[in-house]
Length: 246
Length: 322
Ligand SMILES: Cc1cc2nc3c(=O)[nH]c(=O)nc-3n(C[C@H](O)[C@H](O)[C@H](O)COP(=O)(O)OP(=O)(O)OC[C@H]3O[C@@H](n4cnc5c(N)ncnc54)[C@H](O)[C@@H]3O)c2cc1C
Image 1 (cartoon, each protein chain N blue to C red):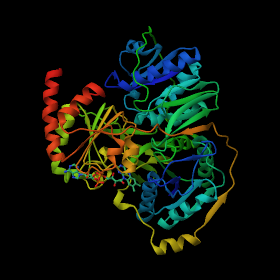
Image 2 (cartoon, protein in one colour; image 1 turned 180 degrees about the horizontal axis):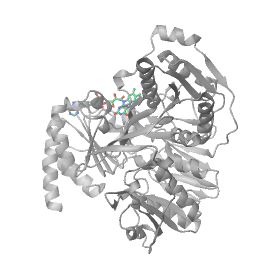
Image 3 (cartoon, protein in one colour; image 1 turned 135 degrees about the horizontal axis):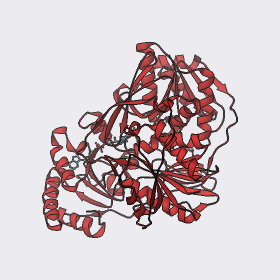
Image 4 (cartoon, rainbow over the protein chains, first blue to last red; image 1 turned 90 degrees about the vertical axis):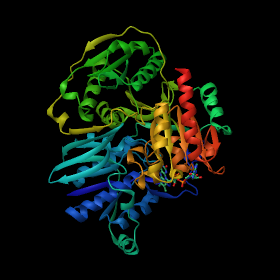
């Protein structure tokens, strides 16, 4: 089985979110970038397939050279090869177009992305890739088993979950549950050393125009101070009469 | 060239988010000088949607669509959009909407913007505001394609009445076997519980509760308020509560009217995911807990004393106000 894991290179969850160039660009100064958490669950599940069932695992990112350390980390975790499509990630659609092309050329059976990336929260790339390459698609995937070309996936739905049976080629939008938090791997020294000599292919992009573009970012209005209350009667009164939520 | 809106039902009646989505679609239709067409799949009483501004309801009834199927539902919506010549397609932030929206967008060669928080600031060029960086910022984004697909953010617009008489029309999409190549084998859903996605009130508890054996009071508080229960990430990681209750940046987003946080410190990743909630209450014995900076109301004190008092007083309050 050939697996492709799509890796989004995102600011660490503790990052301060600021903008530059007249609020049109995310300010990366002082920001640490990491593998998007949802993608890391998917990568770890891919490693499980590799080790337990035999699979090759490639990782891919659409982005500039600055994303390579993130791809190297995925290699250190255990992916066999990495691909970077050498173009800035401008919107979900154009990224999906580049990825669909990588999937077609590489003949992957299973593509694992994240339910959403924690920067732009688009949640659209895996679904778009699936539609573009005519593969099956399961979103918010919290469990995945593959037997031959059959897949059984569990999807989180509002208020529960459902079990889905489908076939490869398959694209999933993954999240926690694909593996547990405790299964995530911190690269060890050996992994990091090996990652240095694993292939990281830089691939030139195909033509793909963005369908959306950011005009300006803005930050939420500053919040007023908390009202501290001494007892529950006062709280109930405020919730009822002031906030009008009960 | 109407505005098309997907209206989600459950057990034969429309969900509240369907009412909100129609209200929002009506706002856009007014701005564009057109009308709203709703699409309902094995749904509730269509005339109900007129109340929020739908002029027409396309009713699809098909036993094959009893279980949600993203591929097939996306095809239904795309075919309806084409039939209506719709230029804008509105979905929500439900799990099903987020599943199908990217498929609809590719199908219609439409640009898609999720988590939209307001009516478009301009319809030509088409510019909408939506939340990014898990509620830490907003982006004003222009969509350049002829057709636009929008995912309305949770609880972002509200339900607005706009009495319109809705005509209904049967709509029979053409579906092929390819639409059913993913098959739902079983659904596991607690029907008696309010879900985090639909809840107006969410009662959430963290590591301050010390152990799973102490959740009785949290559940009782939730029940008293008709609320959903949620928890912080470590609580679900330790197995005190199911993963499905984990809220925050890496868990479920919450955008309820009221969010009550008990024994939760208010880490940045937690706050990001719940910040879209309208009113936030914190109960924590540490006055320095960061949650106090994010909350509207707070009580500094021991949850083990305060929560039972709150339950008791709320029961009295409910008895008087019902
Ligand atoms: C990549 C990443 C992603 C993350 N994503 C999420 C996420 O999505 N959601 C999330 O929740 N966290 C997330 N976290 C974890 C987050 O950083 C915090 O560790 C977590 O939110 C803390 O949970 P907590 O508030 O329950 O526990 P703690 O931080 O331990 O806080 C417990 C609180 O309870 C209070 N307390 C103790 N006893 C009592 C009492 N008797 N009465 C009242 N109060 C009491 C304490 O004062 C304290 O403030 C993430 C972390 C990382 C690194």
